[in-house]
Amino acid sequence: MKALSVVKPWGTMIADEIKSLEIRGWAPEQLPMLSVALVQNDKRLTKNGDEDVDGEVVAVIDIVSCVPWVKEDCKFSGCDESEFEDGWLAWRLSNIRKLNNPVPATAKRKFYNLTGEEALAVRRELET
Image 1: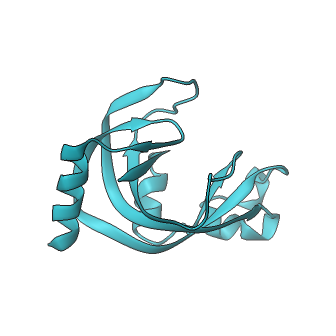
Image 2: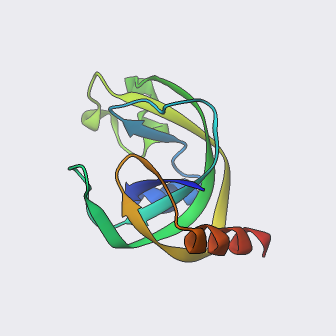
């Protein structure tokens, strides 16, 4: 199962459907990307190889589009217009499936694969 990490509180805001856009400086390798585990963690992962073993899967999401971020989309991005910067991309999220019980998982940069054990735990949690 593919995974994407986000720093707190953004994962919770996405899981609670308060935030429907994820803002990134890079585009997904393909679209749509379906059933991506959203791993929330406490620290920004800024360098290749950075990890946070204290992450947790809070939701499974679909990433359906990627377009330039515009100021009018701030309300869907979890920020206000004063935080807007040109040059970023807005990833539209849909089919957000919040996990009632978050699953421990290591957070990594970019897209990555959960371990078999982590993926199995997420699938079990989705079935409950």
